[in-house]
Amino acid sequence: MEPIRNIKKPELKTEIPGPRSKELAIQKERYTPRGNSPGIPVYIARGEGAIVEDVDGNRLIDFTGGIGVSNVGYSSPKVVNAVKSQADNFFHTCFTVAGYEGFIQAAKKLTELMPGDFPKAATFFNSGAEAVENAVKIARRYTGRPGIIVFDNAFHGRTLLTMTMTSKYYPYKSHFGPFAPEIYRMPYAYCYRCSYGLKYPSCKMRCAHRLDEMFHTVAPADQIAAIVVEPLQGEGGFISAPKEFLQILREITKKNGIVFIDDEIQSGCGRTGKMFAIEHSEVIPDLITVAKSMAGGLPLSGVVGNKKIMDAPQVGEIGGTFGGNPVACAAAIEALDIISDKDFLKRATKIGEIVKKRFLSLKENFDVVGDVRGLGPMVAMEFVKDKETKEPNPNFVKELLHYCYKKGLLVIKAGTYNNVVRFLAPLVITDEQLEAGLSILEEGIKEVEKVKKEER
Image (cartoon, rainbow, N blue to C red; front, side, top):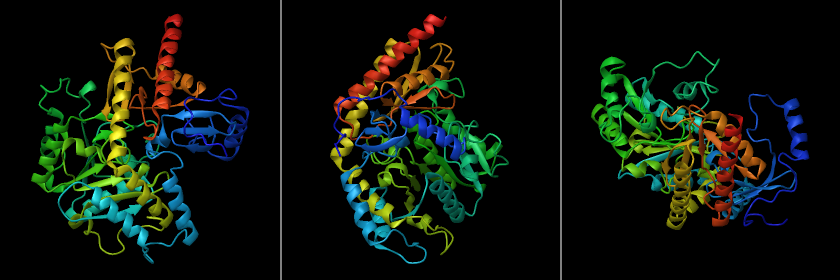
């Protein structure tokens, strides 16, 4: 089969979607529920690096990475070989029945990568939501307290508990109540849309100090088990908090015996140019949740943290049949080894510099680009109708994404208002592919803006 990882730009044989993708879309309507549908109407046959090939033979540049899952690229040879080797031995045995070395080696690797000078432990589950839910269980068991504090614009998952913790109502929470109790919410440091109408840095992190206030007006500190915070919010719109925000929260949690849970499901595993996004703030969390790119594309999530806290649950109180599957652990060992390499992280940082420079240029040249933000290669643009009013412009983003996939670029939205375009390309993307994708994105902004002006 012809290699595709190094092609320099999209290679389209048909319109997008092609005839075979259209056929599969019809079958999808027949055999799967509408609630779980592809946002981009193409069906993928294979992928290499940052390139995917659909069932019609069209080769597209991917700026989505399976929503941040493919940081090491599609079909990473090291990960593929590890998976094949483990599959030759055995696919599965539940770790809570009979153990296996891969689980322990993957946990060892993860504990070595977590910042902090204290004994650590790690355990594994299947999805990001499971990792977050189990981190909450561990914190509650350790503290003996019920309350959990989360943030505006947060996304933590789709289970009952993590859906409750998630901020965005549509489509994640609508009609799915009642929700879990003892979840409390406070403002995040969304400086572009400050909850208090203030400006950074003169605001003196008013939003972070809200945590102390909540202990008097919402729930007392001795009833709060943990705060769960994304150092860079993913689904919420790639909102990157100033480091002071996280530092103040950490100081308050330490003072009150509250577990600091760092949700790195999307921002971890090299996505920001460091192993974990929290490292940009120099904050040391108690627990970190990880998933997505950790296993190079296989379903695996984990919780890693202070061993004293991790040891709070007794035997049998955490776990699951498929948690830490042997094949996924084998993939994770290789993926984490690739990601933690200094040259990989250096390249990730360089990609971020290129993308952010281009996005800032687009902000300068187009009135619809209201804000550019992020850390390293986890960067995004927020689209507005007017830069003064900052009124969200989700329709522009919808049409922009449509233009991009028609030209052979996969890109996705984010944000509470669906008005953010985010960059999640595999971090093995070549300079030529990056330039080709950014050019399509820029051409799309020009074209959609032109059409909008003609409509007016």
